[in-house]
Image (cartoon, rainbow, N blue to C red):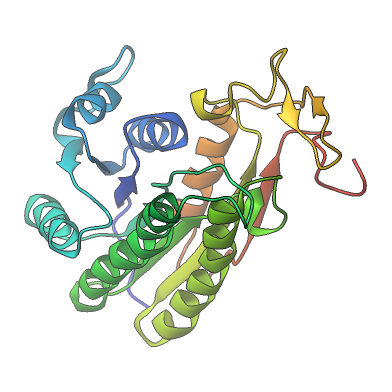
Length: 256
């Protein structure tokens, strides 16, 4: 197996905020070349040009709608044209929609499926096509599965169903990619302190299965970014099929 360049080319979807922004900045700080994607260009620019970030020529903003096949193909073509290859993809873009199985709005369901599941598949497909033809061949797809790939929160059927499906996508990538040194892995994150999770750790608290609300512990999103960097930097002789990283003490292991 040929050795990959020390400075990896990494595509980060959902790179304009939260986990995606933290991962992109951490990767840049470690000397990697990073393409950040998202639907709006302004947050992507902020990811690469914020305080303490020195992306320079190592950073690339790629406005892209992951649910649109043409947009995804154009986005990955732009990355390949700029950097010549794709060594890793962090499939992080995702949205949620509230609603129990008998209440969730149909249009909201369709949008969550389009972005969380179809979007992840489209981006993985585009990345794998590049990874198969580049020299040295191969790369790594890292899917953000979330703790919801294991256990749901109340009234989250759309998000939970797509995140369970991400596990199947990850396994298929790992299996289909074997002949081409393409590795599929998953990181399942619980209660990282981002704007999306702001209600979990404050006075509002998170809705529990018994109908009550409870303030849950959170942890620094920088720790997620470090875990993503570790997965990116592993040699392709190693696969990380599933990595679960959570706030210590959150109600996930056991019965609360």
